[in-house]
Length: 241
Image 1 (cartoon, rainbow, N blue to C red):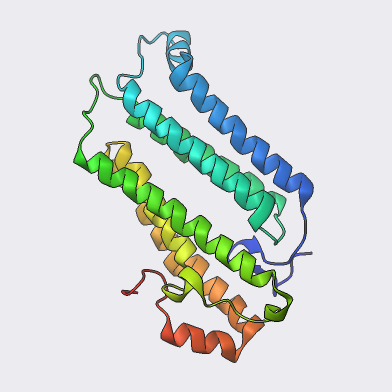
Image 2 (image 1 turned 180 degrees about the vertical axis):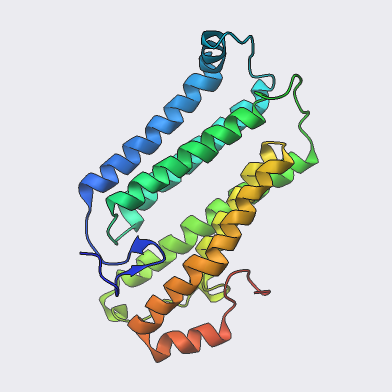
């Protein structure tokens, strides 16, 4: 049951399996990935355009391939997270909200970056290499930090204590920072400045909504131990903020 004590930052913090919800989340996310395959690899975008009486195709297939690979990486990461790392419950509202968000931004970046709205491809360059490094670094920061915390919490001696080691010693919310880097790199790969609104929105939502709500929950749960940790550790960006 979601209560005021367990619902923080729009998610249910109570522990539980949530097997049906997790299954729908994984399969729903897979469906989005397969839709991306159809649109970019199997002529789906051209088919839809022709059905609407428009003659169009993706003008940048190489970039579309890269963005599709990003979609696969993101799906694989989330599948690993949900099936192994995640111990809290997943509410139906969270599942459906995330799937809608994933469909919007993943397919949107695929089409925008793939050239659905431009006539010629954008040449790959150093910025794309940098973007790919951001995406991979962000993915690593998120998944590795969560894996480190999972292993630490599996030790019965650590039960009831706040995790402050590993990558979390550099940032209290290093996983959120990793996601922000991932989204920034992903949007840069789409080669459209307007897409940078997405990582800016993500960073703002973390800083002004999710982090304060989660900190409030953690302070109630761990008390002085968490307060000491928060006083000596950066909140979001390692070494800066």
